[in-house]
Length: 358
Image (cartoon, rainbow, N blue to C red; front, side, top):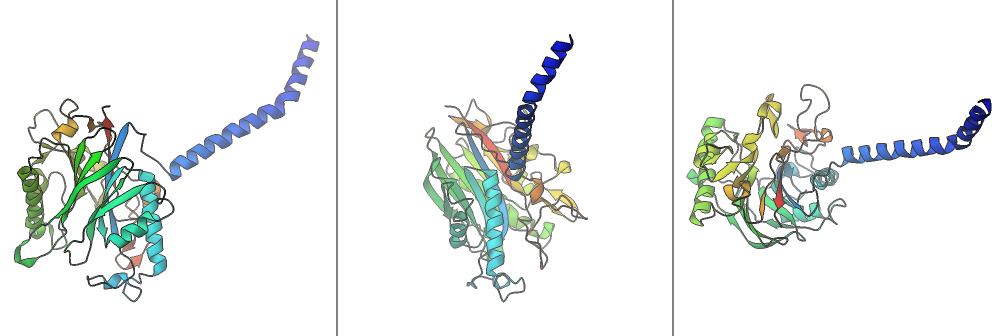
């Protein structure tokens, strides 16, 4: 018995370094995987899924003093918008987009096509195969909507800027319409990127402007009989899913058994009490929304692509959030008033996944 015990001890002593080495390798591998996941929480699950999203990037301006009202975003402006700060903004925006890993991503608060080119030239994005669609809008600050897409995933068949005409010569952003052909299935996907008028003047006073934007979009979709097609509406609507402009004028509804609406609001499925896409005066809102036609919701109606249920989320990793203080958990923004925070945006992005049927 003592000989057996001695033999066992000898075998353990001879292999303990191997055992310890394997254990250390396993620990390091687990730590590396966990750290990488926390750093870059990728969401794209391969060529069986199409990932779409939207993000208000919060004033992506270059440093040039253009014809628009962008004096604040210049080196001599009150925000001291230097080349270094612009570069930081590009790097931070690229980090978020890289982590989102979307195939089609609507964006707003872009100054120009030039800043989109600078953005896609960033190291984290330049090899991801993105192209973009952009039009200059009549917005007084010169901010526009755009969409980036993987050219290996889809082609642009058509695009245009849809003007939103307000009363008394007031100006706002166009709605960007892009018609994509998905290379995997041949499906046509109609994408609308929106940035409706803000609430800066007050919610009630500015509401008619957002209703005008909603009516413009609804009439465009109806006039081209797109209700039965694969339609994706995304954007910063500056209203919540339950507000009149979204619910009644656009005529979008929370998906459910009792609704006959042709536009189904995915964001209405989220619980704003658990958080939203932006926070103002301590209150969460869901201004950043994704809305689909019924054919994208119901797999029986869709030709070859449909929404993956429960996949719609507000993309809000910890590194995009304020870490402490009264605003803890809120989006870590670029500026708070005139104070430079060197963050990401005052909005979180939103994402949704769609399954390919073949």
